[in-house]
Amino acid sequence: DSDRTIIDLTSVFTDPDNDDVSIAKSILSNTNDTLVSTTIINNQLTLSYNPDSSGSSIIVIRGTSQGKTVDQAFKTTVTPVDDPPVIANEINDLTVDEDASDQSIDLYDVFTDIDNDDTHIQTIIADNFNISLVAARISDNVLNLRFQPDQSGEAELTIMGMSNGLTVTDNFIITVNPVDDPPVVANAIYDVAMDISAEILSIPLTDVFADIDNQNSAIIKTIQSNTNNALITVQLSDNTLTLNNQENVEGESTVTVQAISNGIAIQDSFTVYVKASDVAPEVQTPIADITVIEDTASSRIDLSTVFTDLDNNDQTISKMILNNNNQSLLETSLTDNNLYLMFQPDAFGASTITVRGTSQGKTVDNSFTVTVIPVDDPPIILNPLDDLTVNEDAPETSIDLSTVFS
Image (cartoon, rainbow, N blue to C red):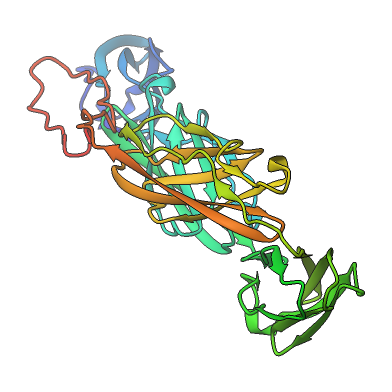
């Protein structure tokens, strides 16, 4: 990749019998024109080197005077230079909608290295200018993008290709368009039990619904339905739902409250139970405290026999996770009487979890403690070292090891 070389041929040949100025010069041969191309203009020999080529060539220059000739040969050697990798195929900018599913981008053909094997090019995330919008990681030369929930905006990612210690970077823009999310039920209204005597019960609705894209105070609530007007009357005023049951009347009613935010609606329903002698559910088999070691796999707890109700069917007892006071230690979910504990990686400590059983509007709670014992994790290879090839008698090479292990 050197600049061209110009050689003055004026004094290369001489003729004792004739004027040297009249000696004609020509290129007789060039043994490697894929390495270097040659031209002669006005006694100037120009050697133009083909890009990314190395090797040697024998060039023969002929001098001709009065029909007689003499040849001069010389050798041109181009020593190899390790070129850095280059961008072969730029990563296209990406546009998605808010809450888009994960995306994967194959980085295999993004970079190339004319002097080395492309399969040895290491790809690294050099920078992510908006990690609050998108999380990025590279695995097996595939860039995996996970979009953060309910976030919109732009992020610029810089991907680095490294080959034999030399680097190149490619930048691209990720745009996440905002989407107006519907309101959600943030805190569902629990089923309630009322006394058979005339009773007034007030239920605040301020925190029942939420809208991440709009003001919660602008959410409009209405009573959508009441399935048993003969049992209770329902009124809504100033974000407070008021229930009034008829004296000495037993039964149940399902009340549905609707919330509208920016034209999008959602409902939440709950049941009102009025019974003369309904006994609240009880804890039949308390959940035992649990102790595990750090990075344990998920655990499942069967809740089918935890609660009982003397005057109702135990199968109708609904369960909910009332509280988990350390979500940085573990996450919880409940499906079909199964409580799942998902432990966060590299986390240890303790958490108190409370499960509530509800039957006919009456409740009972059971709390237990989960303890995670710490484990000393071994270090891991974060950025593997590339193989290194140098010429004999090469100068010392320094390799930064600060980011290799973690």
